[in-house]
Image (tube, rainbow, N blue to C red; front, side, top):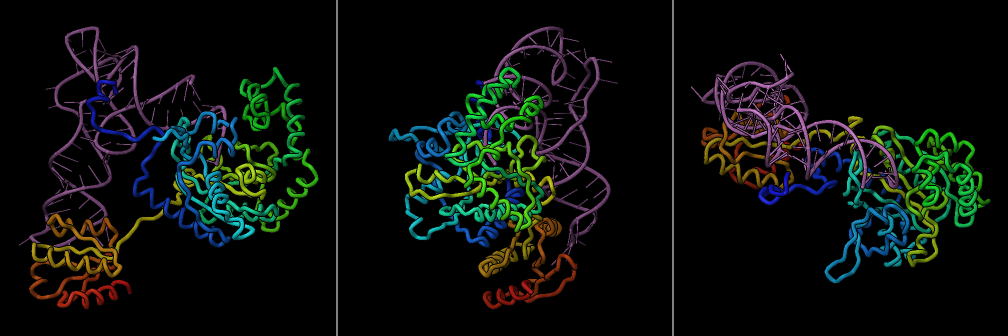
Length: 432
RNA sequence: GUGAGCGUGGCUCAGGUGGUUAGAGCACCGGGUUGUGGCCCCGGAGGUCGUGGGUUCAAGUCCCAUCGCUCACCCCA
């Protein structure tokens, strides 16, 4: 559109990277959310709802000042009072902020929480990546036991499983604040030796974020990294034991996994265990879920010095996989369609339909005065189990025709003398 | 921020080297069955071809610009 038309064209479209989720697709979303909540509850998690807007500082302090997310992807602006605020780019920071603010750690030594909702990052949209996207964010706060890591990973794995999706699990450890810096130094030295033979991106990352270099996709770089130092070989004793215990936990639960020593995370706060649930079915967006441990984060945010672990799952990516693997939610159906012919019948039907809805049935009718054939069509389209046909003849006789749409059997049913009594009978008849 | 591809009715797409009223399938509405669905048949409504400009006697069809969408890089769930 030219600028001229932007002025005259009154149609407004959604922002780039912002999507409407239409009813057909929402059904799959609801299914995913229902199954997820069910599983989270089985594992003892409680839902928490947190705001979408936070002080910008929350994210720069947790995610990391130098990360791409904070540096160039956040929706940040001044509110009307001049306060610098940001639309959350991820869920963990907000959840932990709430955790700290309300002192939840004193209620229970170990807390299991999850939240779901929209996140915002100003990136160039592509397959499986939007500017407003949705995540489930799951966190266990207060335990550094590696069994908890394994348990959380097992839960994420189970969720994918129950959704009928096949993805693979990759794990790694990033070490802690005492062993990671040592490894980092060694890596920087190694990369210095490689200088000149790395791809331009790696040459840049070598300085900005050395760890990132390790998961470069460039073939040439990868071959160079055959001899690169691996974090797993440089873990301190405690981290090595922690990783081994976590692995053991996965084995005890029969969770298949792959150790990927090149896996890194885009958020600075991760320590020790990290993991990703990956697929090759989403184009370049391979991770449907990812997470890890963040043992110093809560303290950094002004809370008590307690550890935590969690993960996020991308709802859009889950739903995309669901449709690709033909796991979408099936068609919906209703209990009854009332086909009324003529004005008097429509008025009676109007009352009946409301009475049935009040009593819990899913009921539809047509108000446009269409032909019976047309109304039957609507009933079929709505997947109605029954259709009640009422014309002027039926009104006079005091009997309607109830058609079982699947078996095509029809029977006479009396029309309401007393509406409440009749409604009760209908509900019973149709529910059985 | 960089690169590539695409932009025709609600949706999916046809429309060789420019030439009379722009097509199909799905969806929608009506009819065939004077009061009965999912199949079938018939009919109907709905687009001026993203937008602007240019070339030409003539452009959806060529050129330029612009907007938008998509995918990829980067990064990430």
